[in-house]
Image (cartoon, rainbow, N blue to C red; front, side, top):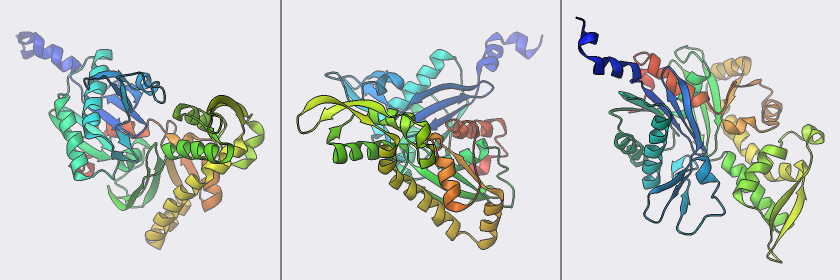
Length: 348
């Protein structure tokens, strides 16, 4: 009788035991299961009841932003590439793992978690502690830019440098990678959240009109473009908000030109980050990048006109990855299947 026959429980465990990768992002968190792919993708938002217990998670919790019921606290645990609330991150991470297990039960020997490069040692420890409380025994951290490079199918071991720009919800990560290490790496706390806030500020300052965060995000995806030549293809929309002088609900028509004026400073700051990287690296590395182009990923790269805006600024081709929202978690997931090869990219 073989070992598997003598140990039916062990045989069952071997079928369901899988390693996990998690992209803990400012705007969205994704869970990747080895052998299955992405099993969960939810906004990084959690709603807590009066006792501090999870009331809603992800998309359901996000729906309460701007209209929170009594005795409910809605939190975004990550902000600007940093942990806004350590306790909330711990609760959120445990909850998102529990939700994943309800959808697709699994046991895990290890987890790889991608994090913004700006996290402090205290914040990294908070992520590690939260993962331990979620039941993981072996926990490895990888920075988002490196995970993005792997997820974009770059050969990170090659000697010739390449550049990756990840424009996420809270940060823009710019990295030049060669031989599994950073030739240059920087993270700026600017991303999709800043686009939403810029729209909100512009409407308040120029129209006297207060609009909630969910409406600002909708405007960003429906009519925003950083490439004026696309304006003719985009229709104006009616937006509900509060007239701050009359303190009464009203509707205003908002067009792509209005939103462009609001958001273009954000993308000018992002392009400045790329200029800084190009100026900081050796001339030969810069020539390689100018010849090969730059990989662009992250959810905010999907905004209309971003690729054209950056190509016009730099006269360098930019390639957006096929699924920018999923590139990082796929990269973290790839490290699971060839763990020894990628062991040097983990930061703990």
